[in-house]
Length: 378
Image (cartoon, rainbow, N blue to C red):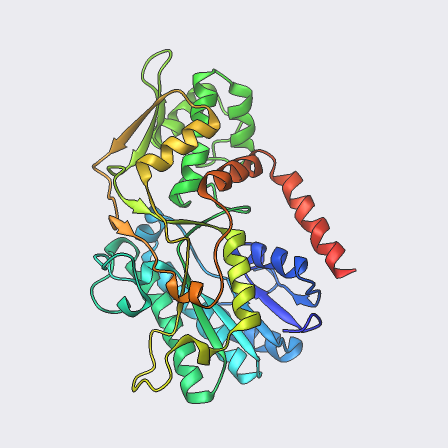
């Protein structure tokens, strides 16, 4: 990509898309095309077709998706498979029809079998059954990989799929019903600390910023305590605050800073082509996607302890084993990408500290990011 290339970032307001926009700006790319969901519904085939015909982007980062944690995935199964299939089908097909030079499709490691050998290599795709709770989302993402792969083989396109591990970073989702485990723990433990200190000003500000089931900072203490208890946060007595965590705490998870993923995505778009993703001379060209991660994992129990230490929470954790654990271990084999020349930079501990500061001061962080982007465009 040259610095003046027209680049469309789909999903630019999300966790991944916003990090990609920031990284592109830092790297000197200024001709960026972005649309909010209100401006362009990627599920609408006609709207996507018109957008590509009018804008003619040269490069596409497909970071738009319907995403959520274990609760959302298991509850909104139809929406997760339909919305994601439609988004990727429309964007990939229109990229082909309108001569996009290169597209990068963002998937997820949930595509791999629930009992996959560890660490997970790209070749383990479609070798066994999926984890039930996120099966619809996983099937949609597998379809996206195969869509890109098949278009490359039939039409000669240059579409590359990357499979990031669990992500966290600025613009993360802290909704306690729909968020992933790490931001959910940060928010619950933050509220737990405020509750043990009887810091109702902090609790009120938090709920005003992000209400829980419509309960905001103007609600009565009893209403707030009721909704907090529903989401696993309550006092067992006058002093001890308990934060409930789903499952046993034993599952191992790998976490990647979103801006590290963005750096990997830009690296891949600048340096690699579809032909670089598989060994030449193979009779069957498949598993051409690229894992992105750190190659290191941690238990949910230990993750909670790191967050506790950062926030200064002194209460107790209760692991609710009536709730599902999900896959017990899910660690990416990242040797393929490392062999191509990329490695992550942000440690988990430093990332948690940075994200917690962002959660406390999101407006300041957003202005800093916007300023850097505007500066790069001048």
